Image 1: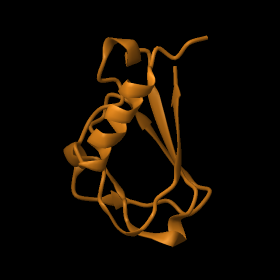
Image 2: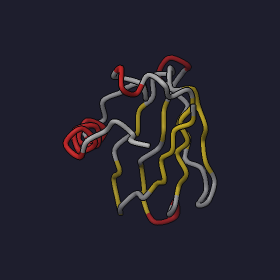
Image 3: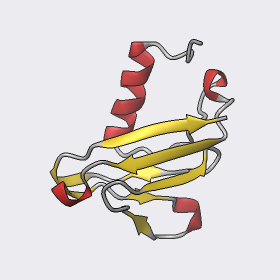
Image 4: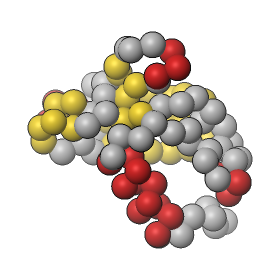
Amino acid sequence: MSSGWSAPQIRRRVLLSARHVAMTASLTSEAAYRRFAMSLNLNSEEFSGGELRFPEYGPQRYKPDTGAAIVFSCSILHEALEVTEGRRFVLLAFFC
């Protein structure tokens, strides 16, 4: 089954995230089927910054431990903040 995403579209979304633009995970009609997103940290102890934030719900920042995840509705505005030291590796998944 095709995801409907081409390589240029994936890169564009990654670049938008790298610029710290808050977004929802269902920006396009091709992604509208997404109901939930999961962000699983793979190396939390190896980077500073890079927390997740949900601006509509307050200033709290979330950085799960390595191997832990945050699952949230794709309709919620979210933002990955700037990594200030090291490199952040995450596994991202979307659920229908």
